[in-house]
Image (tube, rainbow, N blue to C red; front, side, top):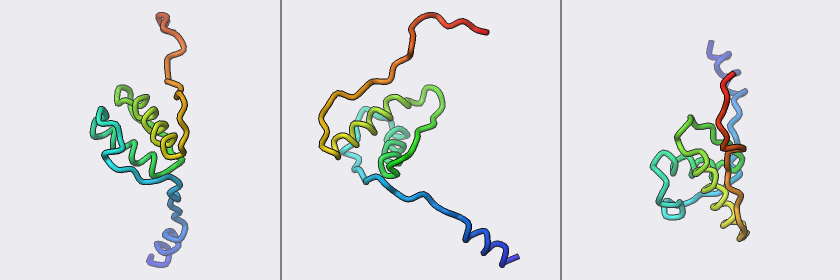
Length: 93
């Protein structure tokens, strides 16, 4: 069994870190603790998506990740803000 476990361990591949570290003081203080942790994780990883449940603040986290990356790259421009496609009432199927 040990040989098989060793074989499986050799197959494990972890993602490389392509981002950068940020200090707590760099992250907007308006974010809640779970949002700050996710922002720090996303920025450190570099190429990560935030899949959070409804109501956890994905838009705020994505905007903060974008701001930190732009700040690090020295880019100072307006950042697009995620918005719904329509404010019209939605019909159920």
